Image 1: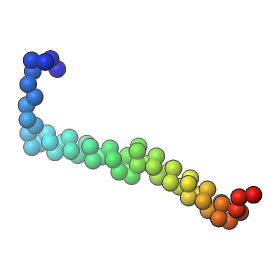
Image 2: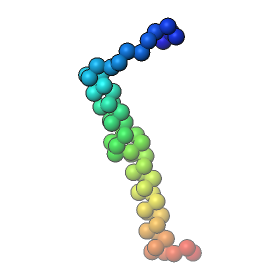
Image 3: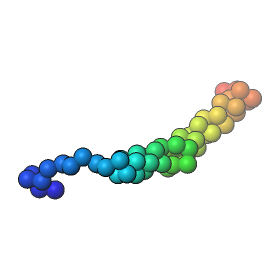
Image 4: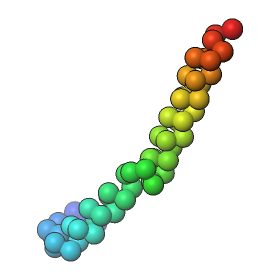
Length: 56
């Protein structure tokens, strides 16, 4: 985009489209959400192991 071009306001349809795309990126089905879920499961497994066997 050149410095001469002006930003035009988005139409309602464009706003909805971009908002929907942003909402799809975040959540449990997104790459970020799946990563957080996997890290949480691993941390829970470590805590359960420590609770059962202790820190030997």
